[in-house]
Amino acid sequence: MPGTELFGAEERKEINDVMETGVLFRYGHDAQRNNHWKAKDFETEVKKITGAKFAHAMSSGSTAIAAALASSGIGTGDEVIVPPFTFIASIEAVLFIGAIPVFAEIDETLCLSASGIEKAITPKTKGVCLVHMCGGNAEMDSIMAVINKHNLILVEDAGQAFASSYKEKFTGLFGKAGSYSFDFFKIATAGEGGVLVTNDETTYKKADVYSDHGHNHEGTNRGMENHPYLGFNYRISELHAAIGLAQTRKVPGIKESNHKNKKFLQNLLSKNSNITFAKLGDESGDSATFLNIFLTDTETAKRVVAEMNANGVGGFNYWFTNMYHFINQWDHLKNMQTVSKLPVQLTGSSQDYNKLSLPKSQEVVGRLISFGVRCTWTDHEMTELASKIIACVEKVTASVKV
Ligand SMILES: *Cc1c(COP(=O)(O)O)cnc(C)c1O
Image 1 (tube, protein in one colour):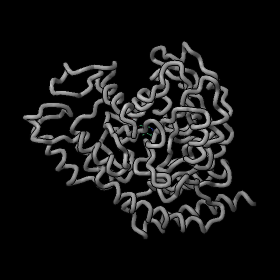
Image 2: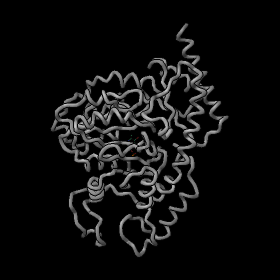
Image 3: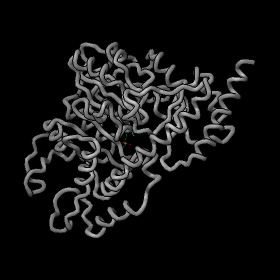
Image 4: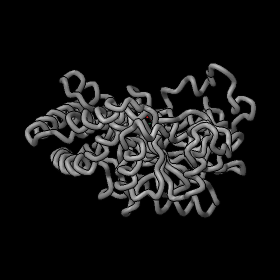
């Protein structure tokens, strides 16, 4: 989680600006706020990095993806194609706006594939919630061809892929709207926060209104301005935005260090022929927050994980069994355990979530181990880590051959 590696004076300065005026609210209070507009500045910084025409900061990546889906016109009864490998927020967002998740296959990019999407399309499919996993980017040319061919709405959950781009265009900007997360575990953190981006003004205005109880933020009479739609409270506070602003300014530097370190480690690991690497839609646009390695098969990956745990190698995720990011761990979803009734429990789904067959996704995530790339790593630390990983892989693969 690189952002938190570089936490310090810059974040304190932005926070102190807010503390000095006491205006913790992002709207109005013009006389008291001493011209500090942290949420607006945070949005401007995100626009600067991504080239998005519009950005709207919110309370979390989860609320930003929900707002992106709703503002794109997806709602109750609409089927949305989703991946089985994602932080569950993407699926919850689809469910809580009333829509119906339909799971499709990912591939070695760790993202939905064009063929996976196409196979999951039904007459009720309205859109696709594409998740750019582990800092990377999906194979956008082939995905856009399917989106356009079937006239679907694309919404991108780039929660883990802020500052990642595909052929010079940033994740989040390929469809109607996209979202980034700034929670504690991402390339930059606001403590808690998210940012919706879009190049479409109508979608932006809907998201702006939707995320603040319908206020359209025009004029100066807070509360009594126009309210074109119903909304809810997805607002970010100035304190969170202040941290997000300071952190976002550091992202170009973080990305550069991540790239260098990822390449260094990858070169060392590629000396072992049992280790291969996840694909990227566009390697040069990678935010490089993760080095994603593949072992030959799930059994080998599990044994390497056990070996690394036994030898004190840390800093990695084995999503297949040990993390909350894969469908195998989502029993509450499969059994529809909800605190109160959701629209999907009335509309039904074309998929039985208990009987999904996603062999490609199982195979890909089964042999995947992801190392968090640190922007502050030294060459010495990376060399040590690589030799420990290789030793574990060699031990496992040697014992398999015997
Ligand atoms: C982190 C994350 C989210 C949720 O973000 P929060 O800010 O924690 O709500 C959504 N989608 C993906 C893919 C994520 O990794």
